[in-house]
Image (cartoon, rainbow, N blue to C red; front, side):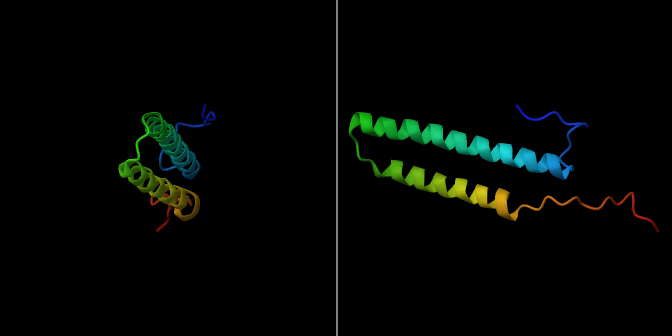
Length: 88
């Protein structure tokens, strides 16, 4: 369960954006793990050696790693300047 937020959550809030992006990454990893687990269980159960399962896993793993690199290393969560607060 996500932490209680002291104010109404907004994507403009850097702390909330960071938390939301990390929760989305965790969900992406969980769906990847569950789907690939079922895929490879089916492969093992039916004794098939289809190359498409390897390709699906490889492409999806690359997407998960790219998502993780972006969220954990590249994403900028610094607050943007508020144009209404700037003086003349």
